[in-house]
Length: 80
Image (cartoon, rainbow, N blue to C red; front, side, top):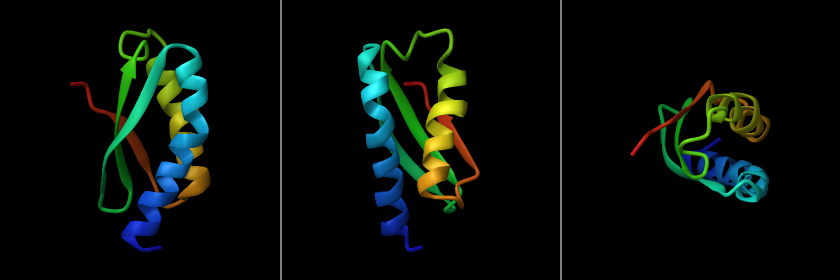
């Protein structure tokens, strides 16, 4: 999978999960993909101060991204 295909697949994954985040007043943006295995995102809105955002990141966001791009090993949230 090329870098461009990987980015498109990660964006598709984020589009799939975005409505769930937005329904709770949050959002997510893709910051970077490093070494083809690490995705850096930024949780936004209500997700920033949410006490379960790490669970959301691991069980929701990371799982969805891995469904679209199995070579991704880790998703981390970058706090602004």
